[in-house]
Length: 252
Image (tube, rainbow, N blue to C red):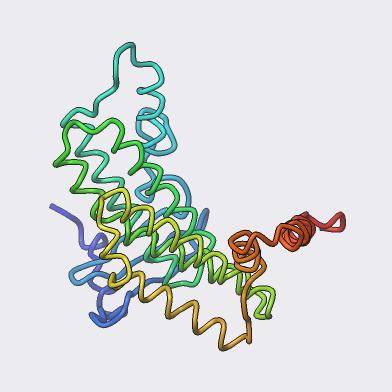
């Protein structure tokens, strides 16, 4: 029988679940920080680094790391087993929960990190999937992960709210839209791109940034236009400006 001291009623009473919001907090323990997410009938606790559940599968940092090791050492073509597929799904869910937490807490660089993990794991699963049906069951969520990643990457650039930060944020949105368009092309659904809800949200986000920070065409957009118009002298000048802008300062 579980002892009374293990009861978490007092936590649930003090932290009421709000179904209209993502209920998240970053908690400082004696030896580390953890994320906590209030869900309908309890609390999830997630580690902030490595696997969200704190596990180390066979000593690896994540299950994805373990799978990559196994694939590299396999003598034949590596195909995910039924058990491995179950563990992959567990890791997908764990990283989804933590990504949502980081977005809610405005820890956008950490949200990008976790989105990148999920996208890389999706890429791995697509190559080593046991069948097409299992592949599609995960690929259907790729646009959603790309949307989160793009949103977080753009907002990271707005840490300093000025025109330059806004321009970099717009460029992140453009990169995300490019990735989404390629995804629609890969699945022969390009005609659905313009009407996609996530695409429209990103375009609206980009338009709002332009208006709020009075940003016209970004340098990369000007470069693309110069190349399209075969103005190669302007294109070369813009490339030089971009190269200088993106070089790290010697004083950083």
